[in-house]
Amino acid sequence: MTHTLPSMPTSRQPGCPFDPPKELIEAREHGPISRFPFPDGHQGWIVTGYDLARSILADPRFSSRKELMKHHPTVDYGDIEVPPAPPGEFLLMDEPQHGRYRKPLVGKFTVRRMRLLTERVEQITAEHLDAMEKAGPTADLVTAFAKPIPAIIICELLGVPYADRGHFQENIDKFLGGEVGDDELIAAYLEVQRYLTELVAAKRADPTDDVLSDLTDSDLTDEELQGMALILLSAGFDTTANMLALGTFALLRNPDQLAALRTDPSLTDQAVEELLRYLTVAKQFFRVALEDVELAGHTITAGTTVIISLNTANRDPDRFTDPHALDIHRQDGGHLAFSHGIHQCLGQQLARVELRVALPALLDRFPTLRLAVPADQIPLRPEAADIYGVKSLPVTWDV
Image (cartoon, rainbow, N blue to C red; front, side):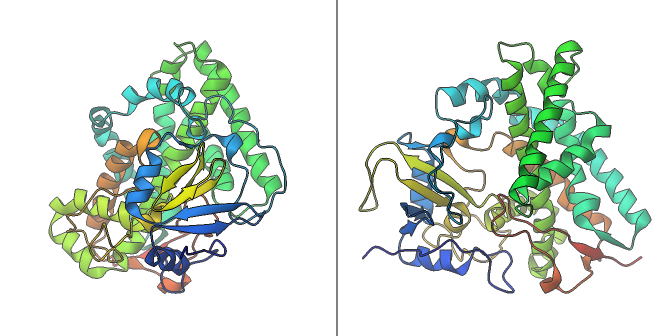
C-alpha cells in the first residue's frame, strides 16, 4: 500500500532541533517514496530514501527548470504561470543551458584552488575570534563569527567591495531566511539585482583580480553575469554560515563528540563530513518528471513534481548505521548534503575549507565554550526557510 504524507511539516519536534520533522522520518519507515498531495490539488511525490534520492538527482528524466515548478508544498498559489529562470541562474535550468553557465566556473572552484584560500580563511577566522575574545565573554556566534567569515570570503572571490558586504548580507538574509513577507522578499531580491547590475558594469569597466572580473572576458552578457553572481553569492554565504552556527550548536549538544574532536584534531575532516550529513541545512530540492518514470514500483507520470528530502535521505537507516546519532568517527560516508548529479554544489570544496578551518579554531580559542541560554531557547529558522539554521546562538566562555 502506498504511503501518503498528508501535508508538509512546518516544524520540528520540541527538543530535536537537528532531526528532520518526525513526519518525514515516519514516511521513510514506510518506504523510500510517498505520495504527497500539494495544497493546490496536484498529486506529487516525496522521496525520503537515500538510494532513490541519489538516483533522481542524477536522472535527466527529472527537470530542475523553474518554469516547471508550479506547485509549492505549503502554499496554494493557484493557476499561475511561472517564468523561466533569469539568464545565468543555472540552478533552475537543465542541460545544455545549465552547462553553459556552470562550465566557466568549474575551474574557479577546484579542490586545489580552494585549498590555496586556506591561509586567507585562517586570517579572517583569527580576526573574528580576536574580536569575540576582546568583546567577551559572551557573543552571538551567528553575527560575530558564522555569518561574517563566509560573507567576506565569497565577496572577495567575486570582487564585492568590503564596504558593501553588510548591505548584501542583509538582503540575502531576507530572501533566504523564510521570515519576511512576499513584498519584502521581492524588494530584497530586486535590491540585490540592482546592486549586481552596478557591480558587473564596474567589473567590465575596471576588472580586478576576482572571479566576476574573469568572467567579463567571455561571451556572457551582463544579465547572465548578474544571474551567475546571484547564485554564487547566495549559495556561498548562507549555507556555510548556517553550517558554522548550527554545527557548533550540535557539537555543544553532543559533548562526547565535542570532547573527541578536541582530543584528536585529526578527526576534523571526518567531523565536518558528519556534521554536513547530520544537519543537511539545504533540506530539499524539487524535480519534475519530463516523462513517465518507474521508481520503486510506482509510476511517476510526466509533469509530476517530486520533492527530494535530502535531510531525511541522509538519515536513511538502509544507508547509514544509527543514522540519527552524530558520530564523528563514522566510516559510512557519501552524504547528499551537497546534492548529487549535474547540480551538485559547485562551492562544496570552499565550504569544506571554511568549516575545516573555522570550527577547530573556535573550539581551540575557547576551550570552555558553552551555550549562554538553555538549548530550548535557541531561536531556529522556520522550517519553511530554504536553508535551515539558527537565528542566533548566544554563547559564553570562562575568562
